[in-house]
Length: 391
Image (tube, rainbow, N blue to C red; front, side):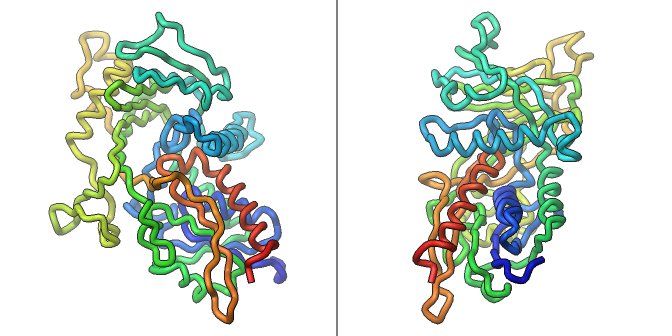
């Protein structure tokens, strides 16, 4: 690598951090180091939401259907990311191994809440409104289109491999304050902060507008399911069914704001929103939520039950329990006011400041907006480096 390249530190190795690091790196103008405590190759942990992401793109990442509503910026970020991932999912072999991490399929979003998602979904391939006679019970409208699901754990490892093969480097550091990266690098020109839920506690940021939205997902073995569905209910409920290329189907429907409750290895419960929450390995799925999710999914699509069962009787939740491959839950890193994408400056001594690009607060939209946010972060970075106020 050229010695005249500026050093850039990216804090965080989730989907947002790695995507941003890759975008900066691939300009050819910077040496990039990702600093994090947890990486995709590590065991599951509450500290790393990307392991638990569901990630279907309707436009859609970890939250399945873009919820841009009237947010023009969010729609643009989601759309740009979809276009990048759609190219990566091309099955013609030109994109290499990454295409195998995606599964293109038809998806139908059913709604009973009176909301028309057309303004933020109409650019999806083959988008159309569902005819009334094709609506499922409990829905009043439907919208169908072509999308893809993404094997998120494998995709995260692919991102890391892409970054490292491009000459990037990593450092495993348990940061307590953002300024620590100045002690663990060679005079960086700028910092890009992508700490996810850690933005609430990381010194130098400590953004109290960041809060968790607890989610729980179940992986079912159901290779006969080749399409996806979601249903948004009048009561605020939301259930989804997303097929993967492996023959597994990911289902879920839990979105609980400010739910920090997890099970500890020694103590029965922990309910206080404190940095010590990260002393636990990962939150344990709740049996009550499991039953709730499976009951909603069965109502959404009875075809999820084994064909042999459906041929002889009405399927039950217990029939779906026999299909469970894995379960998981995690804390989506939400933020009041939405994603923080902006530049600030931090004192570095001798009367000089270092630019800090903030890129966090994506909630369940980390995957679905990752490349769009990475592109904006790059623009902000170069503007800060070459503009005024960075000395």
